Amino acid sequence: MHTIKVLIFFQLVSTSLLSQQVEIPNDLKLENADDYQKTEQLVLNSTDWLLETPISEYPKKRKEINAFLMKWMSGSPTVSIELVSGIVPLDCADCLMSFMSGWTKYSLENNYSKNKVACAVAGAENAIEFYEKNKSGLGRNSDMEKLKKQQNKENLKKYIESKF
Image 1 (cartoon, rainbow, N blue to C red):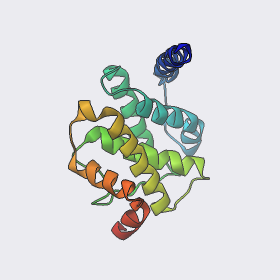
Image 2 (cartoon, one colour; image 1 turned 30 degrees about the vertical axis):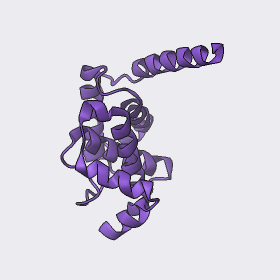
Image 3 (tube, one colour; image 1 turned 45 degrees about the horizontal axis):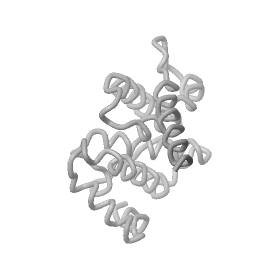
Image 4 (cartoon, rainbow, N blue to C red; image 1 turned 90 degrees about the vertical axis):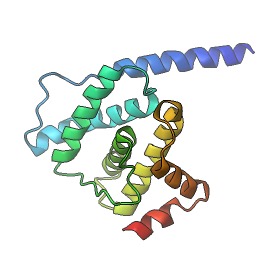
């Protein structure tokens, strides 16, 4: 019982610390390839923050991080995201952001991977994990339920391949 209390305490502390770790600089500039490269770690940290922080907490910070990620992903010279019907959760903005940031994270962590299927699988897995953690606040989403069903059947990669 003591071990469980200690684990819960550390989980609460780490969640609290994680929420404080990501700071988007006010003077952030994304004007050239070097600017994007210098902020890659911030992109990775921001992606993790969005996934690990419950949607009901820190709404102002979530909005700020989403805006930064959107700006970074739309201007990045190294990462290109392909939004394909049937894979992308279009009717859930937070799930869509999770998909795109998961794609981006995979690409950055895998030598700027351009493998659309692998990136899309990573994006879908990130979005599914986000959805599962925040389902009570988001409500049921048919796009996410379809992806989750494919993942549960261990068929997510094949499903995504069929959509490209």
